[in-house]
Amino acid sequence: MSESKPNGLPPQAQAAWDFPLFDAIMGRRSRRFGLGMEMTSGPFQHRSDYEPYPLSDLETAMLVAAATATTGPILAETNLPGAMVKTIGKPYPSAMGSHRSRLFFTNDDGVFVVNADKAKMSKMREYEDKSDRDKLLGFYDTYVEKIDDGRMDLPPQEPGIWAHNQWVTNMPGTTIFMPVIDVTKDIIKLMINLCDGKAGRYAKNTGGYYIVDDRNGMKPCGNQKWLDSGLLNKRKVMTLSRLEKMLSDGMLAEGAFMGQLMALTLQATGLGGWVYGGFSSTVVLGGTPACRGLGFRFIQSDSDPFPIPVGRDGIFEAYCPPYYANMSEAVDAALEGALQTMDEWEAKGMVKPHTAPNAEFDAATIPASPEGIQCVKDMCQYIYDTYGKFPATVDPIQMTLFIQAHHLDLDFYDKHMKPGAYLETHRNHFRDWHGNDGPKKRATED
Image 1: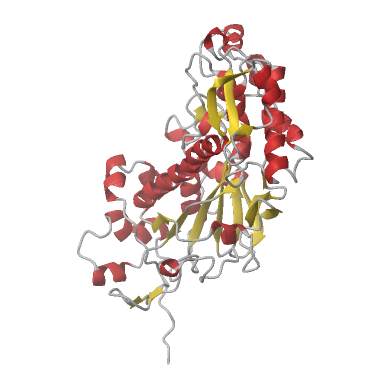
Image 2 (image 1 turned 180 degrees about the horizontal axis):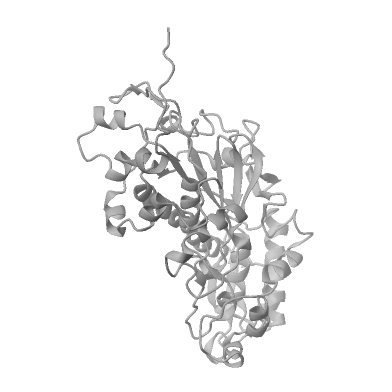
């Protein structure tokens, strides 16, 4: 990264780090008009006099770190801490500490993925003082991987981009961040937590939840055997669609949290941009002939007329076929490492966040029972056999938001908006971040 320095963050990045939180919160706006853009209709018609100006590596690193950097160990201060304590904290909250949200982004140079799941932690507060701040530059250099050359193939037209966003989305000079969510692993883990009535999670052996298929006559989800055995409780009924929607909604919020963290960082750094939808995730992920998008693999199912995204091969793969031969193997992979002791995890360099003796903590970490695991395997296989996909009612891979960042064209706001439409960080951005390398005027047209 050309902007990094041996002594830590450059002064402009230090200033952004110290930007007042509530000034960022109250100063957050959607600021869409960037250098090099043109709006040809409506009350704010304007053609920028400047060429597009892409984000620098340092600017991009600040945004990536705000959303995905390592913060330290998850505390998991509960009476049944479970396997979630053995994970690494991130700036955004995550269901069960799983962090199955992966950040992709594209700019003029290519398409990138942030492999934040590979990052390690070194202490309770990873960014404890100013001496730690340059870690974010190393985080960016180490865990951002280029997966395609050139800007993501996503034409500014339908069916991919809705009409009201076509003038601004994915334009030259912009960077689009895309949180992509895999819900399969957490659905498997949630099933274990809800259904394993033999693992001691429920008082007085009341049994686990009985999942029924509300799209198929409320029949058992491959779990009749486990209901009969007493592992499940017929009085604790939950429908399959309710379970999957509950988990999916919670996980999609992770992408929204990432977006808000980056939006606040835009205020601190003086960059423009905003968080928005207004696109077809099927097209963006690459499920149609319209464009390559992010190049994800899709499958077809007789139960669903639309292509179903399952992953980007070798980059981000869901816990389901075709990446596993069957759902039994997928469940084993999703649960791998969950039963390791604190001693085993500390040996891997994981930071222990609490003062409890390891043996005492391990005793409170209720492992899944063999019967509970097999019950979940049976349910997951039933779902896949019945619907030709896993999960049944939602896509395994989901995306609902873009976070676009760009350099503002202040001339547009000075012309069309009242004073106060942008912050001092926006006014002074080129002075503070780029010195004499300011935006360049477009060539004069004959």
